[in-house]
Length: 156
Image 1 (tube, helix red, strand yellow):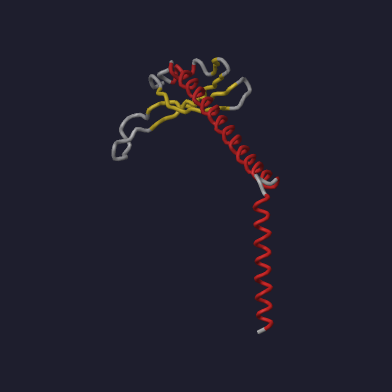
Image 2 (cartoon, rainbow, N blue to C red):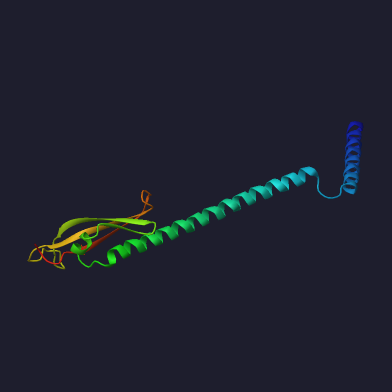
């Protein structure tokens, strides 16, 4: 029993001394320690860096969307004056401001079918698959490729 009692007394005295040390430290400490301030500043810098990157990426995305909208308008205006494939063949390339376009025409024979899928009587329709490639700058990258169909006026 003596060993158990002495162990108990030493544990109680150790805890009592520890409590006094923490009480003294609590009274003396005022404000943040240098380590706490450094940790808080590093967390804040990581958060601000991620916010900065996110804002940069979203503004780049807005610029890409604006570029694609402008390219679509250029492609549509290049095709706006032509109803038939022969009209498109007259101006295969052009430019507006910083935008350049190139039009490729591929003649096709399109078979006509009935609603149930059977071939319809008569000759196939002549049409052209028209592809407009829009480029920003004279040797820049292709921003948009637009494909549509235009009929020919009459069979040859």
